[in-house]
Amino acid sequence: MIVKPFRGIRPPKELVEQVESRPYDVLDSDEARAEAGDNEKSLYHIIKPEIDFPVGTSEYDPRVYEKAAENFQKFQERGWLVQDAHEHYYIYAQTMQGKTQYGLVVCAYVDDYLKGNIKKHELTRRDKEEDRMKHVRVNNANIEPVFFAYPDNAVLDALIMRYAQTEPEYDFTAPIDGFRHQFWVIRDEADQQTVTAEFGRMPSFYIADGHHRSAAAALVGAEKQQQNPNHTGNEEYNYFMAVCFQASQLTILDYNRVVKDLNGLTSEEFLSALQVNFTVEDMGTAIYKPAKLHEFSLYLDGHWYRLTAKEGTYDNTDPIGVLDVDISSRLILDEILNIGDLRSSKRIDFVGGLRGLQELKRRVDSGEMRAALALYPVTMQQIMDIADSGKIMPPKATWFEPKLRSGLVIHKLV
Image (cartoon, rainbow, N blue to C red):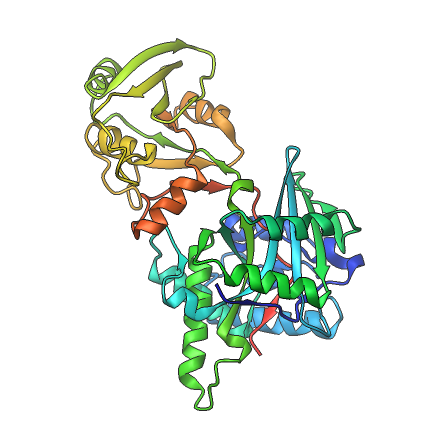
């Protein structure tokens, strides 16, 4: 894989906690407006600039994109974002519930994405790609990073651990989730060469989170190649910003389902229908969490049930067919409940991340939902196997946590 260091644009140490924010796609406009409050240095003014307009203004309004560029320029003029004098790689560490994962912040190569060397496991929607493309174009920058995984590498791990013993450039705990974020600058040229060389030996990166941002960044880079009659291949727009984590360090949480109805079935009829493909056991009223692959948790009428997929209902040789998200989609949501298109159906919703099974119980007990289904989390190895096979995962299959904070470093395309 081709990577390069870059002259990051980032906040002075004393301002980082005022500038940094959650990613644009994990909160809505009202939440961003509330979190930004009267903080004019908040990155939300660049990544959610509709907050600078009257409530109800569409985030897709052309004026909103223009405001993003205006604010990005203002942040630089006022010294809230400052470009490093030299090219660097960076290290970004996140600590959640006592576990730390370390990522290398690099510039990935646009052509590696276009050739399929940067592998994806989800479909992207053109409207979402176009939204992010407009944001990249108007700012002429990758304001937010994408999130890659790479196969474990002992040399890179040793380099990272050496830096982790030193004082970080940034070190703060985010107020919303309580996760710790640390950031180091790799200034040493020999260390930079090591990073470049070690990644250069790898055949692939894997997109963990940020499929739309990856597509948008690469497509804008490709556009700029076409538009430049003097294109050489060395221009900054040939690269886009990514944080790359060792696969074994990543935490993938369960991504669960809640349904509004049982497709006309009574509870007894639904449980009976499940018994065709699952062993169904009533686990009582205490929350029950799936303990292993091919085991599911159903919450219905105040009781938790353990559903164990029967032999023959899945294909261990098929990277998609072996997934619990595929088993549940085929044999429960589609076959019994007639919910075929998870992307568009209004009869289903998804609960991921740190909300836990208590949130499933709450939504069913409130009467908003009729039943809930909890899944055992997908593994990073399963994601990599699917990406390597060229296949696409079913929708709403993965929930990575913690999310990358935005505003720690930005990559300009010029």
